[in-house]
Image (cartoon, rainbow, N blue to C red; front, side):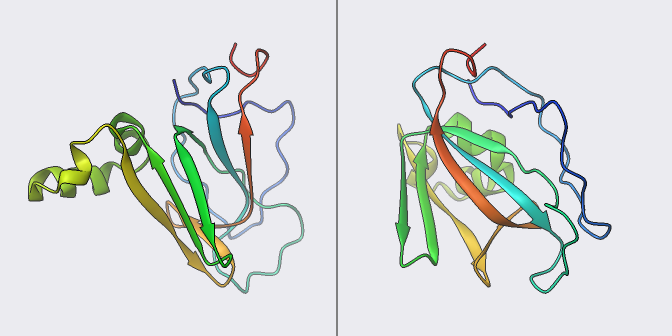
Length: 137
């Protein structure tokens, strides 16, 4: 389904960057689209001595759309949104918003000074990939 990449040696974190609570690693679905966040920091002006913290691998996603490098939008199945953005899904369901009931949900990240915010951490790097046979195991 969705998951996080396991790495042999994680880069050291900046002293002030906090890592969001880890999601349990689940196998990635072969051939599905994922978004990986990394190079995390606590504030936009934090002086980094290394790569910062690794973030989650979010997905599978149906699509990703970037506008002028300041809006990072994506679509995913409701279970993916609920897993990675539980507060958003709970609010949609409580309000009866149709986005929470369709086959796909649209959402976007906050972009702050060219950094993507997720779970209170700002990420300077992101990549997209299709899970291959090796990653799907």
